[in-house]
Image (cartoon, rainbow, N blue to C red):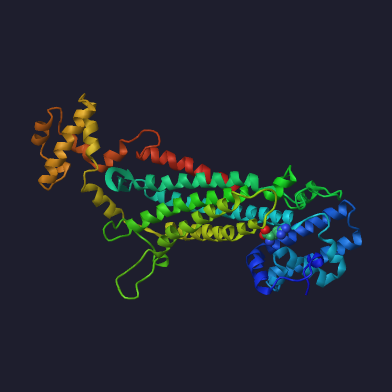
Length: 462
Ligand code: ARG
């Protein structure tokens, strides 16, 4: 066997050098995109009369056969042919003879690989957008079921103020909405065709780049051939958006893990998303949530890795750029997998409303209510804060909660306090009354749910 680029060489690299050089072990993931890119290229060559009809037909039928074999998984790749492009070209020549050698007229592997990756990421991004939307729908569904479920809201992981559980879930809904928007925005820069940029400088053949771009469904073509083959911004953006998605999932994973502890007991994750211990029979471990939290690390790593690969590269193509692929594939796999896990977990989790209610009835997360109560009665907020702080200390020292204090203690603390204070201290009223726009008040949460529904339906229509 000889190399497709072997003419200028007097000897071949040794096998272990070939191994080091080759990308076929991972870029075979791009096989369908590679063949589709070639089909569009050939059709364009024929239309521009660079290839005659007989040759074009022959090449196209060879490529179509290879496409079917690729779909069946029956292609046999070889390290000697380095990457997906040369492997397919070699298979084509083996299949249809020397005419296959005309496929590479007017293009280079440099615009070819860029085209493959644009096609690939365009599809995967669309898939991820759909999964984000599906997870939003699951969160929305749980939110609708839990508008009046009250949990302690936390800051510093210390009980802060009571909130609607729906409000907490909806916070993640909006994070995912931004993730979806970021992915959609990234699509604009993925949806550009580099095909026809050649190795770096364009080509002497009278090609029609718009024609092949249109056949491949791209929205536009790169304006500069050097930029077309050197640009990996679209992958960087994808990795960056993916890191943010993973960061969001990781934060939710952390909450699920905490909430399903014996200490919290706010939710129970379905058996299908948990595992047992090989030694401790009682254990039910939230492994899937932990894995999503853990896998966030690798996606962040892929972003850093590609930024580092690119930072010192002169124009145009450099072989360093072959390093852009494995991280991208792994990111797609990780984000898709993590979203699917979360869709299942959110859908099946049991919300332990009673435990949440109990938690919120036995804490000081209603202290702000009392301070606000005093402030409304014309006590400067700073003083009100001080008065309530002292009452909290008194409760702690006497092993009780604010709702348990008799009215005379309140009166001693401040004469403006009347017996309507007990209504104010109830967690339901604390939530209900936070009716400022975007707040946790039930009315606001209902309004928020209506808005959220619009976002999901909107993206499903697209
Ligand atoms: N396997 C290469 C890559 O993934 C394809 C482009 C190679 N181009 C070249 N001139 N060696 O980057």
